[in-house]
Image (cartoon, rainbow over all chains, first blue to last red; front, side):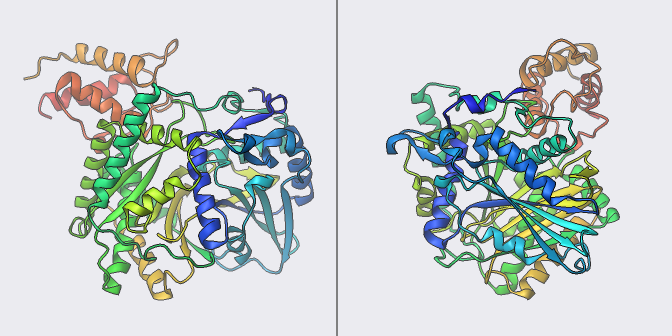
Length: 452
Length: 86
């Protein structure tokens, strides 16, 4: 730990991956009147003090102005950056409390307010980057707390690290003016190779995507919906026995350190079950898998995203058998790593810093006939592992809620918490009927808990 | 039969981990826990690719249990068994 130094820096340039995510914000704003917001939800026991969190967040935002810093290009060109000098005039991130009666019944019921937050439009140019909403039940006997943020502020693991840091400040074990890994704030992307080579790498990545686009692909949301954003999400929580089976199956079929391919396969099959029931030909399934490109051993980055994307493409006849599907995904991942596509993707994103905001989503949609992919997917492992308490209360459960533009209009985000697997299915209103959603959950549950 | 002795294989795997995959020094030893040392989903695949390049054998990630990744030594046991046809 060391002093952040952020307050002494006037501007913090966005990374290429930050700019890539900023392009999605522009896209959703233009097409659907909302923003590319991400969220995590903490299900807390008694003892949470919202006023204390509000004071802490205010203090943190004063010490770390990036939390409310407008994102702008200097003089309208060059790489976009957080403007820390302008942050002082911006309000701190909101911490709002919403009183409610009895807690909703069951592990999987959550306040509609949280989904509404995802449908809001924020202004990155005004530094609207982060907010908290606490729904208190029975006068504080339990609380559901959502942190909603502009997706480029943190990736999934970075958001968990931010919560851990904030909680450590709450307990007096950290200071708000001291961040872990402050060097990440002070350095922009450090190109690993000369511009000419990065250009070749970016073109190779683009050609890889275009090779997939040669085969038709259609998401369940259909191409390019220009409808007001109305996201909703459902959580499927497996009990401990089913989770144990899922984890064991993931290890046996995909690998102890590479279980995400099992979960990705399960998500593909759940989407395919819905497509088949509708009589829709998906053509193929094209799905990106985010890969962290932080230095090895570095924990989740706060305020910076460092990711690349690995792409997978499978055809309906490869989906019917789970073992075959996982084998296909494993061989595609290996081939992509061998071909250097993780590094190529990172290089492609590095050009996003100097490109018009919309260019990446435009290129993808042009290649894929208006689609971005078949659906989004994330597996983030243990959610806030080793944390039993947070902000003075027991942490009973927690998970991520991922952003999803239409199309594809559907995202499955999975994580583990206290021996239970949570699957958050985020979907644009109208894309899944109730029957579709029931079938989707049934398929997920059957594959996850099938055992080996 | 493989030309790799168990000892030579263990030394090579340790060298790959230390110098190419984890980039660690100091306290990292053939008995160090690999996950604790930073072996993650991407690193394990790169490790298997490097081992394949050295030995000619591909060890699928699904064969790797937490016990095999306990250390460079336990991993070498697995790879050696694979080379012997096990």
